[in-house]
Amino acid sequence: MPIAIAVTSSDLVLPPPGGPVPAAAVLRPPEEQPLDTAVTQAALLLDQCGHLVVLYPDSLPAAYVRRLHTVRSVLESDRVALLPVALPPLAVGVLARQLRQLSVSDLSPGVLASAARLLTHYIYAGAQLSSVARCDRVDVGFGAHVGSLVPGTRFGVLVNPTRTLLRTGPGETPDGPGFATRLTVARARPRTGEDWVTDTLAPGWRVEGVQEVLPLPADSRRWWGTHRAVEFAAAIPDPSVLYQLVTSVRREECHWCGLELIGDRCGFCSAPVPRADPAAADRPAHAIGPPVTARTPGARTPGARAPGARAPGARHAAPATSGR
Image (cartoon, rainbow, N blue to C red; front, top):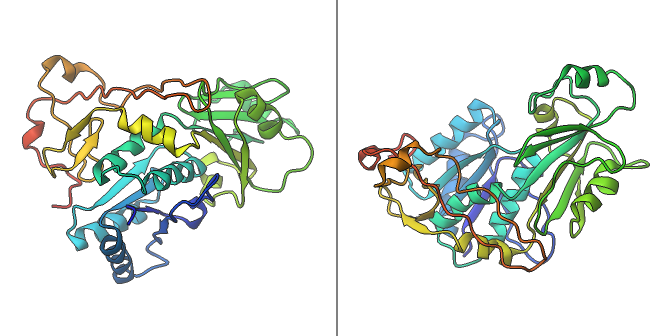
């Protein structure tokens, strides 16, 4: 059985770009599902699949996050990974789809969960907005605020892997991926007339194809600060390239729960990977590494090495989110 992948909204379960992909489970918010039902659902997933990896936007309401941690605590299980993701809602769905593609491979649960941080670096996520007056995802200057008041003005916002704000127009695109991607697009209303995302951005980034999904994720309106958004995410669609990328990274064993992992932190118990090199403690402890480029479809995508900086003494500190 594949490792179970779960999300926190049904609109984050995106159709596969091609070929069969295991479905994702949908965990409901506290106001829609009693605690005992949520615990039973998670327990069934663990019985069927062995491990459960839950992806959710880091903007998820606090009560919803507490519910997820409560379910894991009630189950007293080390086999549930709760992974907050600093991406817009559509991009979270794209990342979940990539993990669903990899869940049928021979990747171990710990490697699959920690791969989410690596794959985040390879997703180019943003939106076209009619107004940036309420957008706090990028630095918005005075000119952009004034431009939001002019009818017909549109803005392109890229928030991952870098942050960029520009006024949209023919030939105007932010720097895009240097490797083969497919563009997933969700819009608040059906397309009418010219469209910057599909007519300018997609050919400018030389994507291999465009997939439009409906509807726009419900949380996108709050995330972008407007209900008139065209959200997009360009990501690697080929599961064989994703697998090669993940398996090219050095593997470690979690000193706390014993699972195999990549990067500098366990996806299940959140324990950091101790490093013996004192100089490494001065390096930033962010994700696995900067993106690399594979400029031709099907080309081998080399993996990034983990910077893995951790201070001495981490080996004996129980992680706060371990659920132990």
